[in-house]
Amino acid sequence: MTQHPDSYYAASANLDLHYPALEQDLDVDVCIVGAGITGASAALSLAEKGYKVVVLEANKVGWGASGRSGGQMIFGYACEQEKLTRLMGHSASQSLWQTSLAAMNLMRSRIKQHHIECDLVEGHVHAAMKPRHMKELADWQRSLKNDFGYSSLRMWDHTQLRQQLASDAYIGGLYDSNSGHVHPLNYTLGLVRAAELAGATFYEHSAVTRIEQGATPIAFTDRARVRCRHLLLCGNAYLSGVAPDIERKLMPVGTYITATEPLGAERAQDLIRNNMAVADINFVLDYFRLSSDHRLLFGGRVSYSGREPRHLASLMGQRLRHIFPQLQDVAQQYTWGGYVGITMNRAPHFGRLNGNVYFAQGFSGHGIALTGMAGFLMAETIAGSAERFDLFCKIPHHDFPGGRLLRTPALMLAMTWYRLRDWL
Image 1 (spheres, rainbow, N blue to C red):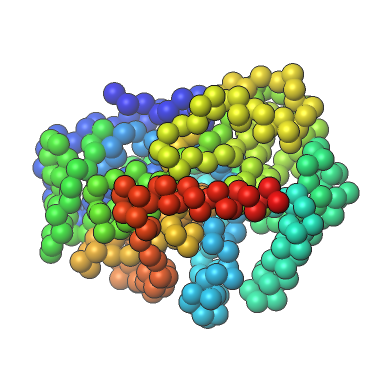
Image 2: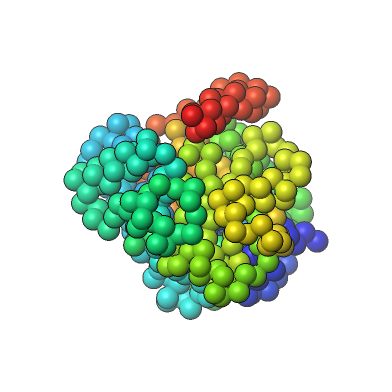
């Protein structure tokens, strides 16, 4: 049986959840495909409303990106607010902005309400590596304050950042006290357990091979089928082949994290004194934070080929020690990766197929809070209040060019340009 991929998160999971495979046909109110944060969040909300809910997971609950990510809880969207304003107009952009803040509040309230032990820590900084970055961050702060009323951001110069972060790789940053970080697998497992306690039923090792749309949609596995009134597709980058119409608007991209051995409390605190999460603002970025047991979790690098880079642990270690040369003597204990689903414009892609089949995908590396809100909004829509979900559905999206065979090399060429821009 498939278990969680080897990672620091799997090794430090605080819940050991096991569910059977689906062996018999079922008739339910709602069938959810995918037991990550989106699926678990939708299941929790719907079960609390009294719906009969079944969740089908191809592997283990929390197996995909939800259980492997950097765990950085950040305001807004991967595409940035300015792009949403250009695409949607200021009023719609304002509403979407408020929903992004509500997503973080929803996450915090569920962690508290359901006693989810996931090491929530407040504080995050976007770090600048060059003067151009400082200008971009200052403009970003100004826009978010003046146009959206967001006032929790503080510009830090090199001295202020260096007081908190023991690296000379950065010249300043934009600090947000309202963002933070969590252990993503423990958060996901906590949502699953809360949804189960509310009445949702989970099945593992039950990959959906195809769906049939209509008045009563059907999700088929190799051994059984689930007939429902509403079908939710929450597999994101791991939903290959189930819904080709939406798959063309999504690109699975590999991204990777390495975890050091425990550093000890004193040495870890010397690296990041206020325990904030950190991300630079390169297009191909580095991001990192401390774990609760005093490791450095360092993420970065991407792969568009579908193959893990050769000598991955060594490559990740080189980058980690470039940012923190004082860790030359520290061993890496875990290195892992997974797929994140990105869209052409980096905005999230929500929508409906045939009225009663819902989907949410394309969080583009910015999903730890927004995925939970996506599930909440799908449940809200099924219960009769569709306004917020439908606003996301109006964000325009395009297919990746080149079809299944050529879209990856086309994207790799485009990414080469962005990497050159980062280096310059």
